Image (cartoon, rainbow, N blue to C red; front, side, top):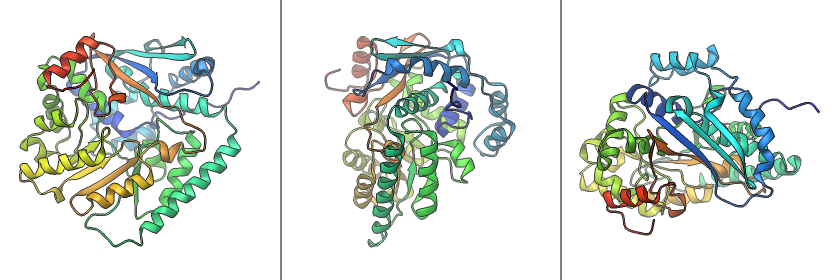
Length: 400
């Protein structure tokens, strides 16, 4: 039986924030060692361990890839990408020895460990591969028919929304679906359809390859792993958020100005997000907890600092669908600029229950790191002692 083409055929097919975090870590902490672990958070229709042989082949193919000249030229054309980082990517290859996969009962164990600048980019590719291998076990024709019907419905919802009275700030939505997609081909179809049908609302994608190919804006700044890394880079633990934000400011000098707030929770983040950072960053991104509570806290914080919220942006990206995004827009749009990143509901809404998989940073420089999410189910740390210590340092109540 002939084998199908590899799922990943371009190293551009990842989230923009992988490149932005990668560049910062190469410049600021190139010596950091890291470990990332795969986790499936929900029941699956069949044991993921059955995917092991195919996954091994896909990882072998991924590690054979390198950046092509046209891909490097595109990255070089993004004004926030530095020439030395693009030169690093020119010689970069994934090392197969840095990622280990095996069956873990009926599940999969996937661990990437090594120099952080050589393993941090595995995450999105691994998740996209596992998702597509999983999706292939279902009736493709039926899934695509259902996916297209649901996509037409979403387009219809947004067109109907256009009849509402205008608010102070526009509705802008982005595709954040690389890691959770049904397939690469389906994500491309979704993004192309949204661009064609809803240009007034659809403003970009986190998928750098699709942004290039479809002439869209690549969207993204930082993810949890960036701030988590600073828990183990030598700064005082209480100061790790400030250190991470300061390095980001120095690296990008005003570009990529949306900060992620929930690595140790919104309250602890705002305690560190003082007037200096609040002026320098364009806005904040929500990724856990009640979005309305979060948004009100953000606006109240700007008010306390006497910053005009109309000059700032709140980006929502936690499990959104179109109705949820529109409801949040109606609530906040007269008070601040907004953006909505939709992932699974754009790229994997096919009538088949998607798997909820992540691949998270668990160690840096031999030390545990953690995310104390505003949604308890998203907290991830292998070390209960460190998790308790982190809660104590940031005065976070609740059960670990």
